[in-house]
Image 1 (cartoon, rainbow, N blue to C red):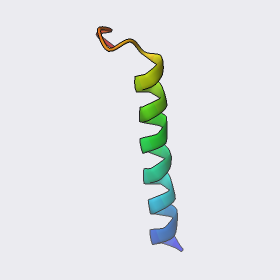
Image 2: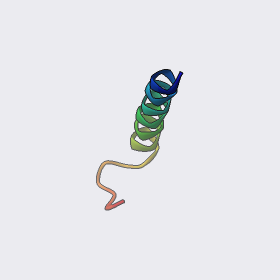
Image 3: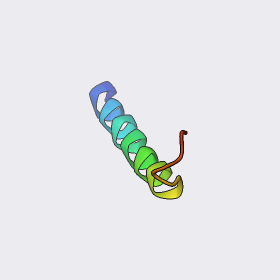
Image 4: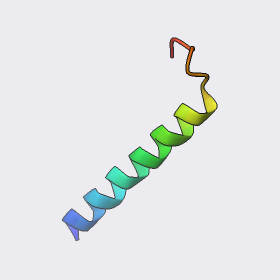
Length: 30
């Protein structure tokens, strides 16, 4: 169960980073 939850967390973080990258302009310093 623990390993499974870790994979879900990693996948969630990746999806969040992709959404943030899409929302923030690439020329932004953030």
